[in-house]
Image 1 (cartoon, rainbow, N blue to C red):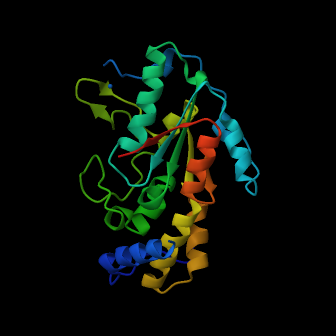
Image 2: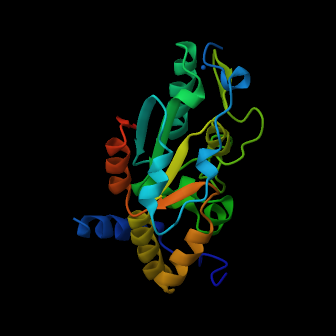
Image 3: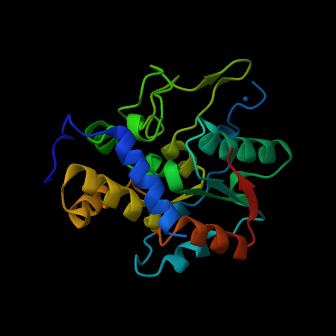
Length: 236
């Protein structure tokens, strides 16, 4: 990659300010996973979809119980806890994961969760997006929700809960990320680092996690999910 290190002179406050300006210009023992004993979903979230036709991606929404979780900010565990709770409690009322369609839209300042840990450390996402590592409580230098270690997420009274993106994908949860937010954030960071914005965006897109679709925008994805019968739930 062209950019191997964020210069120590980078001003994080200035970067966040640039992001805000850019955005403005654009106008659990009872909740332990039931999936262990449930019939697994078909791997719909790993189907090959024409990247030039993001609408086709939404054709994977086929379950009886459909919901879209709109994640605009990191909000701790919530972008991942709510989808898991939805699946578990549907299981408790007789609906297997295959009966449910869950979409999580990562947009605005929640987009770092769509990237692998290499970008988190290199571009200090924990500092820039104000995301603390759930283990260290310090600004995160990794995506804690991608392939978490056993026991990473334990809830008092509930025990270990599988909240990893990969674990949710295994139960058919669909994730997408906002391209408009990626464009805005990389442009602001490129200006701060004095590098080429197109090259920086290309690097970020190459680091999108497996199975996550890059949607034209988060609000576009929210609308499409609702057109496909998903109830709306704001993550907050």
